[in-house]
Image 1 (cartoon, rainbow, N blue to C red):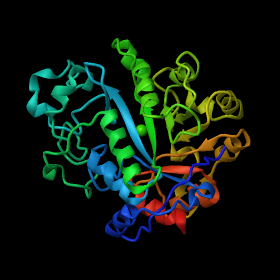
Image 2: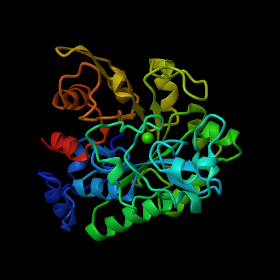
Image 3: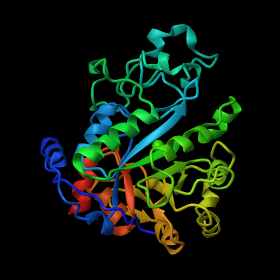
Length: 347
Ligand code: CA
């Protein structure tokens, strides 16, 4: 089922013109109804440290249709927007709280209260062992202003809804429940905490501008069943087989697996490699995963387009977008580069 939400899209020539355009309150053009959705993966993470409110604001200004929130819990059960259960690859936690690492040497968000996490400075992603930036040409880690902080789910929802009000747009949210099995093993039920917050902010039914996503089938079933989620739900599919809950994602990508999923999800979010691979720059191989999913009424939002980290052998960002949209006919895509993907989609 294609989303029927209406989105205004600014002209994205440069960041500045896109931001300026986004600030012009314009009548909705309903263009998105017939074309794929641009989902800002962790915000405009190609340009600013992932999941900071600055990265979300930029993605909004660049014209994203949906902004993604990865969610983990703090010690005092507050959902915060972080990609990992660890905080040592995007913050200065190792300097600020050196004694708080676990036996495995890692620093976990769940071991810190929100007040403690708020003391950390968030920076561009780096390797915790070497200190080297993961993406060499992105925002410099050492230049992160003090204002870059861990934000809560509620703070981010307030920002997006505030911008929706001031611009007249209806940019959606795309929250992900991270590692629910691990959270529950630690005594914290993340889904049970997140769902009521989403409902309180008006995200609870299918017409609402929200897709809830998760990698663990066990939890996806629980969210739809036991926890009674009535909004749109997306099953994420990894590129490599078994997930943390023991479920084999290769099996979920078969005709039988997809049919099982279609009984309770609205869409799938597969790794790009499950849709297209390149054995060499001139040899592309497409799968029929999108076609099979569409036949079952599922939307397909693959992840992740990174123009500075293309799939193996993929010759260009242009070729990647062409494969995802023109060939595979995906309904949207997660992208680190909202402006690049939006420009392609509008073309
Ligand atoms: Ca995610």
